[in-house]
Length: 48
Image 1 (cartoon, rainbow, N blue to C red):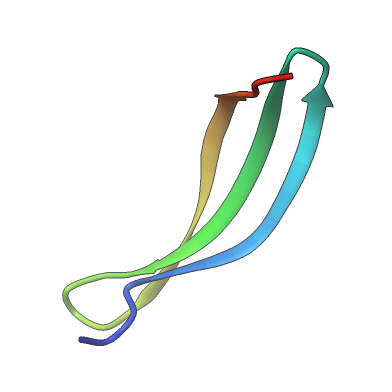
Image 2 (spheres, rainbow, N blue to C red):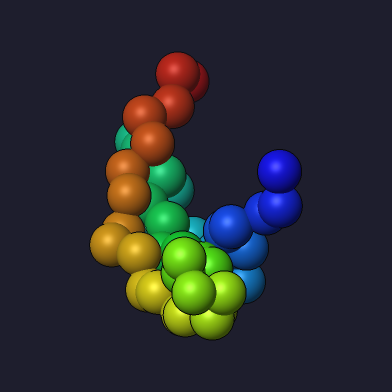
């Protein structure tokens, strides 16, 4: 299967008690065109 998503960049916005990242990605549409998407910041909990 061909790749449909490419991660362009990830930026850590905060890494205090959890990690907050901003991700920019490209995804391929059904018609074959690539589109850029700015994903909402996500929080990943960390065990410290």
